[in-house]
Image (cartoon, rainbow, N blue to C red):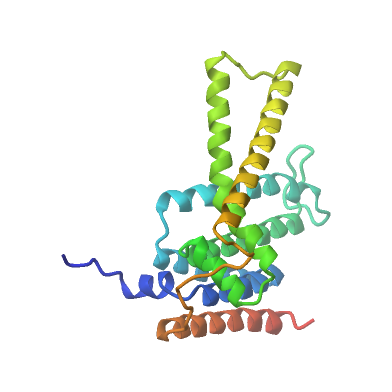
Length: 253
């Protein structure tokens, strides 16, 4: 059977070494988060949009995460322009949005979306196993790597327990309201999840000890850099340097 080949740009991003992706994401996110220049923020958003288009993450995942982040940003737009002191742009009854507040909300929007898109383009195209091994290879403390890996591994287990408990409440005719009974019911639900999570953690730990786990991740796969990794790393280094240079040139102080 003929294998369906990926486009070159998608192959470059999706198949790149996880260490390059982690370093590129961290460097890009730090520079974008620190930028105070509008042109640099707009350029960063454009770069991240191009990367997420080339990487091609699942559309449903992309829309869901983008909507979640921008829902929070929408709340910032509803508050920041009216609470930041400065020159009023317009007068709407008692609401006087300031130019400084609008610019601050705009900066937050551009930077948050740029960081979100670059994370979706680089990190979401790697599986958690590769990211865990990459973190260890980058000399991140093993306990932090274990925390990241097991949190990801068993979050869906807790989610299934939560869905099962919700289904059980519905079969018993539970109708959530803003009353004491509802608050108590949800408190019991959280307590049950904590107890089941603790019990599952103990069972998983015992099972790992039975399999000889000594706190070290082992894999037959060896991490090694290839040509496409160096290309992606070089491109990202240049883009990060351009963004940092724009910030330094436009605002040397």
